[in-house]
Amino acid sequence: MDKQQLLNEYKDVFKTNADAVYFSPGRINVIGEHTDYNGGHVFPCAISLGTYGAYGARNDQTVSLYSMNMDNGSIVSFDLNDEDPEKDEDKSWINYFKGMIVYLKELGYKIDHGFNLLIHGNLPYGAGLSSSASIELLMGTILKDQFNLDVGQLDLVKLGQKTENKYVGLNSGIMDQFAVGMGKKDNAIFLDCSTLEYKYLPLELGDYEIVIMSTNKKHSLASSKYNERVAECEEAVKRLNQKLDINKLGELDEKTFDQYTYLINDKTLIKRARHAVSENQRTLAAIDAMQKKDLEELGRLINASHISLHYDYEVSGKELDTLAENAWRQEGVLGARMIGGGFAGSAIAIVRKDKAEELKKNVGKIYREKIGYDASFYDAEIVDGPQRI
Ligand code: GAF
Image 1 (cartoon, protein in one colour):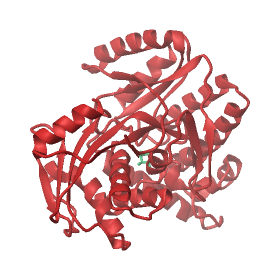
Image 2 (tube, rainbow, N blue to C red; image 1 turned 90 degrees about the horizontal axis):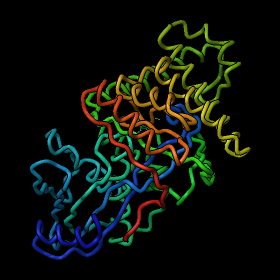
Image 3 (cartoon, rainbow, N blue to C red; image 1 turned 90 degrees about the vertical axis):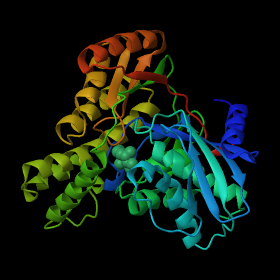
Image 4 (cartoon, helix red, strand yellow; image 1 turned 30 degrees about the horizontal axis):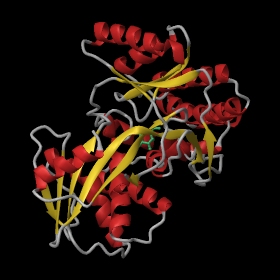
């Protein structure tokens, strides 16, 4: 969908002209899964699949949203001064927008009139490519630009996470909002989630490219299971605190963890904590491998990440496993793994460019046979963060 089509759609829906059009990316994560809320490291990047928004000011106090992605699309409106989250399940998608408005206003930023917003995502909702952070940062960017708010980019990132945690109820870390909000073309972001220190590293894969493999399965249970994992890691830290003075599992190396595992004294909690610790170490090793241009090693670490997410963290599933495990068997594939929260969503594969089409064909065929419907494949293009287009 190009800018003109969005402007036309806006006019059709709102019967007036839009003032501006914006784009906010989604994200993939090379490695470092479920490490962000554990105070570890991540290595994500913003991608060209994301969310478009056509904006028009109103001279009243109404905010009207229209999503082209919702079936039976209709305008959903609320009062600019209404601070309560939408409870109706069918309309709950508006909370990502509403939360950003509420929290910016709470900080004293002046948003003094309503607006219309038409949204179109070419990022499948619930695809594990962070459609929610894409939307939060889209809203933040539009409000900052249209209302001349003197708010920093990192503050918008943090408000996105706050919206997710407090307004929507997912106790997520900061990776998704950071990857989207701070995205830089052709670069991945090496982020320490405990200090928020970060470094852009060009994602130079030479003859290889990243293919996104989407399960097309919606993850309905994902948020409750996600919050369960967060709580399990917190409990593991509490038990380790009997002897170790740590706040988060990301502070531990594997050797120290092995020495004190006995304190956790619960099979499931040990597995959860072991993933958080080992994945953080794998992420550090992956950065090292990238810097040495050792792509084979990067691939092995990516595969090990999937195994750990499957066995220790138990956030994979038959759809994600079918994609990753069959990608491993294809010629020219360095590594493959599920990304994001898990249970459904997407996986990535690093594949030799001249083998990418074969990978999509072969894995797509096996997936259809095994799962009963199609997976989708996308080539990942790494782009800048949200902006007016
Ligand atoms: C989801 C969350 F939103 C992120 O914060 C992160 O924890 C990720 O799952 C798992 O790495 O996308």
